[in-house]
Image (cartoon, rainbow, N blue to C red; front, side, top):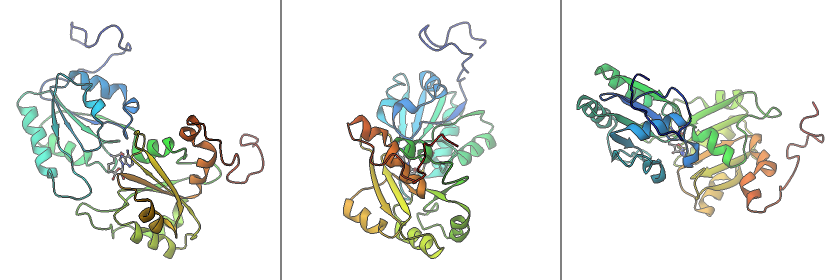
Length: 288
Ligand code: SAH
């Protein structure tokens, strides 16, 4: 750091923290919800920004960590008409050209179904310098808060992240569900609630078992987190019955059963593990 004035007070962790210079835009992930899942780079950015442009799923507590900055909402939810992507990108360009220190704060990770790539591209095309700060994506961190390991040695050596709908809100016809089904024991679906009937039908048709476990985690990592445990063939009915609503991460695969032993949030509330060996290995997990 070339600045003689220290960026942060002495309580701040010692590191050569980057300076958010006027005219720059930092594209930053805010994590899935729980403010504690923010990275230190994100906090460093919040402390320096003149303006924070944030998305729908960014928690208010996180914004409160940038009291000196203007907060601009640029939320888009589930294909509903709201701020247009192009307008958001151009707004970022304008603010940077005004000499602002701009923090673009997006839910989860900016490059995971977050259009961070498009915004970054527009900025670079307009000659604006950028920095990318990754975040914990809901499809990993959100499942972890539900006690679901996104990979588990007994279940999967790969995982596929898919989005349930395309830019216009329609079901993604470009996805080859047969190939996904064959190639991935665990499938993590973002933005899948609207087209869940279509998605489960495709997976069943591709040969996935009707009894395959599915977990749906809504408002993951927030105080409103809910987890619905179901199966491929009962999923649609159970969602209707439960009345749960997006934002939701849907996880298809046997790894979801691990929640029976790893639901640490339930255990915090005094619940007992339902099954110490949900995959039926019949031996201690570390014995091999
Ligand atoms: N960039 C984000 C994803 C943006 S797309 C990330 O990396 O997490 C928005 C979708 O992400 C939502 O429709 C939902 O499927 C998922 N999502 C984001 N935050 C979530 C949360 N707290 N709980 C459940 N799903 C979430």
